[in-house]
Image 1 (cartoon, rainbow, N blue to C red):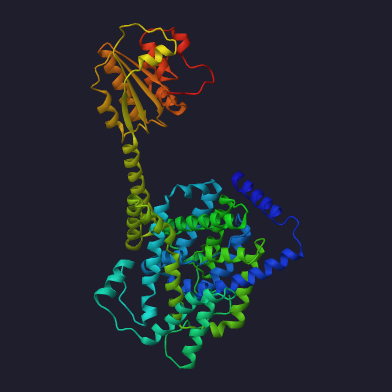
Image 2: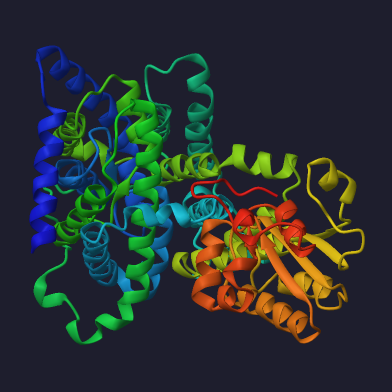
Length: 565
């Protein structure tokens, strides 16, 4: 309860700061930006509702409610939410397996999960997902969207498959005979979306393309599948009710709920990060997750589908001069009015036109700049992580794809870290030490100096052991200035080296040990084995100590001194 009260206080503070000094000019900018965003959001809401296995009406309800609820409770003044292509790619799989009832219940559970993520302040955890993984599942989602629209674009009905790759294989192995009329309709929309922005950005290409394609279909009397009637209400007949929740079988819907929650968090916070840079305003990540969660808890009871922040709508709102979250409110009101005023006309839009919108959207979803960067720089590990995540996304589900991608990235990172760890032996430069004024004996012990660089952990321990365990010198001086961290396995390996050296009657001195590494030395007991009197802040002083040429007290690191080799 304390956490929730703090969040309510945080939301009130966010609103107060956002609307400080709000004036009429800012209101006008918000209203104009909201109307502009509505023009962009209208065709996308219709298309993503259909793409997610629901209806165009469900997409509209989602856009309207998300624009009101999530914007009002979220943590950013510029964020606009609604149905998205990424979410529809996840929902189509859930809808095929569990029906719309399953989609609604999974959305409800995902909403609860998002609220908990925000309450426990886990918003920044999304940043731990590597960029190649994000690029890979974005491309996988784009593939799912494109494959899901093959039937609408070609005017055919292909057998259902368990995954997008299975669906694509069916089309390739048994090519259907397309309907040239649906192909023409989808082509008109695609050409307008691609070509219109080169001429003007005053009107959204998707909206203009849908209007033009619908007019052509009506003019020539083409009998092609249409959206159908749009209910003039935001409370749809087909919606979630408390009585319809399968309380005894909720466990079956936990995996898809996790996928929806993961995607909702990732897409919303990534969108918020981009939007914050564009708008020059902050995003409160935890509050944003709470807003997204509450929105996705409520929306299913109206018949909508899960929502998340949308970069397309958010960027349009910012570029149109929007100042506050009123942009989202105006956009929702404009969409609601369009349902009442344009419902009969919207119902006559061909599904192939929405297919054209989604095909172009799927192409644009790919993070081509990141992909070109990985290819240009020949980052094989990044390309491998991206490709495996993409295939896993299209063949499995989002949560599994993320786990596979993160696990692969972790393995590749550990491998690179292990390879980066080096052990170099250097001779003792007695002439330099004598020139510095050290009175060294003519005949001293046999001293070998080893310079360790890179993390010392379970993946790199073999490199360290192979370099040090066979050394037969009287004294080992191990410089660790280049070692940023050490794990328990690494500490145990160094302990073995020290003990073996002691058994041979030799000594081991350490120098340049970083604070984090010193902590592990102390926790593992290695410091006790070595002895604090054998820890120095430079390799030179350790060598001098090995020759017995200076008092110990002069060789320990001065208070506040910086480690050096």
